[in-house]
Structure formats: structure tokens, C-alpha cells
Amino acid sequence: MDAAMTKPETERLALSVGPVLYHWSRETLLRFYADLADSAADTFTLGETVCARRRELRLPDWLALARELRAAGKEVVLAAQALIETEADLRLLERQAEQHEFAVEAADASALQLLAGRVPLVLGPHINIYSRAALVEHADLGAARWVAPVELALDALALVNPPADPVRTPEGTAIATEAWVFGRLPLAFSARCFTARHHRVPKDDCGYRCIADPDGLLLSSSEGQPFLVLNGTQTQSAALHNLLADGAALRAAGVSRLRLSPCAQGFAQVLADFDAVMNQGAAPAARDAAWAGLGVPGPFGNGYARRAPGMAWSSS
Image 1: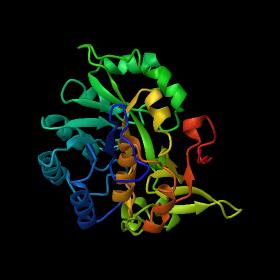
Image 2: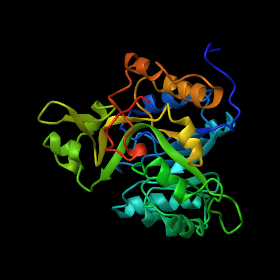
Image 3: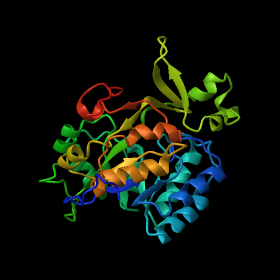
Image 4: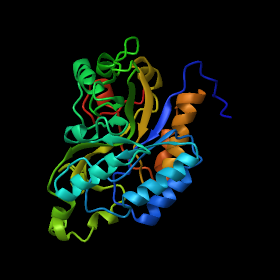
């Protein structure tokens, strides 16, 4: 056990592995989840959320993987696609609503009416919930959990779902708050594929160029500073959001679940470090500094959590 580790006296923060946002091969995806089956993760959100053309795993494959993770003692949620653009996208969402084994995380308000009342519902981070009134309205749809928007400061998050007076479902169940604590932040989606545009190929005949960028395609400013990351139809922050040292503030804001967004290298150690710091009393100092040696992308940022520009970073 870490010499600086003391048993915390607070309730355990659940660790939630978000959907893989990048285009990884089928073998890479299956190996990634197999490696985490015995990890400290409590919940896995599975599925393609960014691009309908990425189909290394189809719904039956995701369901089979979900059953395996459930057998390993994990909670599993299916992820809905963020942009519903075609009839095929709508049919996939309908099939997710028709299955009765797993909850579904709605990635966009357009999916809520189709999913509500049919499957257990999780409100994803792209649904615009910035006030208590908005969360109350969505709780009436039967959602048991919400993932706060990534740009919402922790003190503002506490006002939306106060720990002393949480929003409740019509059945009286308190809505659980999940906060994004690790990973590049999804900032925007578009019907246009930015990766295809970068390579000067049509979106509908892209050759799946994004599979060559397992952590997205980094863009730098004219001054040579990391600025944004292209991930197909999604634009991400270049800074990797990192709230490893913010356990006290997260708890004070009423957060009970921590979302970690997967990266291609070193993620298992990141997950273990978050568990050690948040739930076992380990000191955060130097742990995240070692991630770069494992291939975890950088630089770090935590500005949004502290009402600062998102790419800002403070280690204290």
C-alpha cells in the first residue's frame, strides 16, 4: 500500500469508464475491455457515439460484450449516438430502446422521447442541463443519473443538483451526479467530418482515416501550442481534462460518480490511480506526472472545473 495512503472516511466515488470516442479496431476494443474486466471500474458505457460509419462492433457485439462485463460484476450502459442523421441511425436507436437488458445513455435531446419509459435512462454530457429546473424536467422522464456538461464548473454543478437537496425522480429516487474527471473534452459535433476534410477525401468515402489516430488528430496554434483535436465529426480539447487532485471539491459538489474517458495507452493505470486517490486516501502528487511515460496524451487542463478557460491548468 502507498506509504501516503490512509483509509478515507467518505463514501466511495464510483468509477465510470465512458465510451471509447476514437476509431479503434475490433481487436483493440475487445482487448481494452478484457484488460479492464478486473479493474476498479464500476460502470462501463459501451457503444459508438461519434460516427455512424465506425462499425468495428455492431449492436449484437456490444450486447455480447456488455453481458461479459456484467458477469464480471460491472454495471453496463449502452451509449446512443450523438448525432442522429439518417434512417439507419434512427433504427439503431430504436433497437437500443427495444432491448431490455441495459440502460441507455441519451447523447442528445432528440433521443429522449424515443428512449424515455422504455429503458432505464442516463442523461449524457451533451444534453444541455445547466440549471436545477432543467434537471427536474429531465428527471420526470425517469432518468436516474445525469452526466454533467463538461464545461460546467464544480460550484455551478452543485447548484444544479445540490447534495443536501438532490433532484428526485417521480418515484422519489435521488438523481446521481456523474462528472467528467479525465480525458480530452468533447467540445462540438458536426455533420461534416473534419478528419476526412484534413485528408481531402469525401466523408462517405473516407477510407476510415481516423483509425490511424487512436487519440485523435492534434492541431496546434500558429504559435505551435496544442489547441484542438480532430476526431472525425467531433472536435475535442487538446488539453486532457484531469481532476485527480479535486476529490474534495467533487464530493462537495455532490458528485458520486467519476467519468474517465478512454485513451489509447496507459488508461488502466490512470483508472487505478483515480481509485487509489479518490477512494483509498492516496496522495495525488506525482501520480499523473508519470502518465506521460505510459503514453497518456497531454498537456493537462482543469480550467472549466474552476471557472477558468478550459485549457488552463493548476496542479493545486
